[in-house]
Length: 265
Image 1 (tube, rainbow, N blue to C red):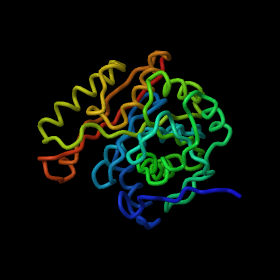
Image 2 (cartoon, one colour; image 1 turned 180 degrees about the vertical axis):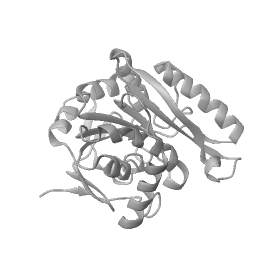
Image 3 (spheres, rainbow, N blue to C red; image 1 turned 120 degrees about the horizontal axis):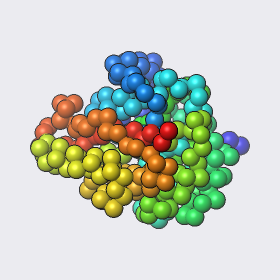
């Protein structure tokens, strides 16, 4: 029997109604400018509620419109917020559902991931996890028909996560999406300073400069930077914002960054 991972945060992080959700995501994408130049090979996107970080995420997903017909597989990696474990967790589920429908897991690519050291099946890490789920409605509306390779990081090294991403890197048919917010629960001024420092480290591909205070998805980001260095990639900061920009109190904010990774020509 096929197994399905149901939506866990529909109605909380984003609308639980298909029509409302589709309209919300379409509006966010329509308001984001389509950038000139090559489409990114990888993106780092925030994963808060759409009312807070949706405009930042949309800046990235709008950049995929010119190559939407080419991308058929998305390697999706983000941190575990609820379940502590070592390594990288794969799901047993064959589909991930949102109100917009079900997205199939790429079984062949998942087998490649599971063959890498430290990758194992752990459904508990996926059951409540929002870091991957919040990317799916954007992927569904921006790309349409696609398969995903959803992976949640526990305790890992840059080499471990990087080796998995390297094995799945592929060509223009594959997009890598790293899900991460930035600083957490500082005042607005402090958060902006910390997030600028984080962005500088990410652009410099400085794996060692990032810690868990920099970004909750630190392990996945470090793995991406490890791969980017091997491929001669360049990281560009598209936007740095925080929850105060969306109307939240400025005394305790969460930072959101949008980053693209372009391969060397």
